[in-house]
Length: 187
View 1: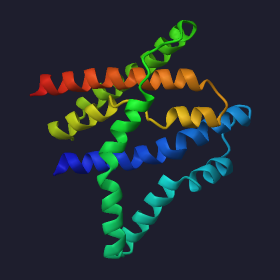
View 2: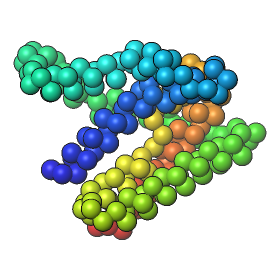
View 3: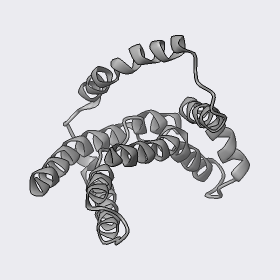
View 4: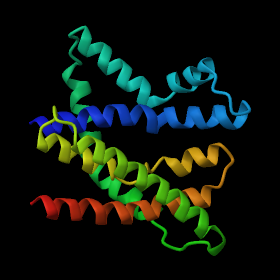
């Protein structure tokens, strides 16, 4: 019950960032000389399909509007394919061949990613007002792989797509090991 709610809330916030927020920030930094412009951020965010969908669903919930059953049935069919599509995408993206010239950058970025995840995980674990099962759930989520959309947005920014894809692949393997290890420790 409660861990599912924590996962859903984490996913909602994460989706806003992963499906447009991070790209909007990176685009601002790259194209506006390091300055983040709120108007530019909002323009990118409000055109993101995931952000639009979340916004509509939050509005419907606040207004107590129920979607027609035909829409729910249709979405259920698409949602049923989600697990398969996720595994298929991982299979396509997973590429464990690393460019020797980029290994230093790859190690640097992976280290930054997991050191920050570890620091936040430690902080979460010592918060006294959160139950142990919520803490464990949040810690697992912090060690989830880098978003599969990262290479796509990297390409849209005309940046190093190959490095982004390598980072994504490495994070999948590392996250599986870390998350599985944590589950074994907590069992």
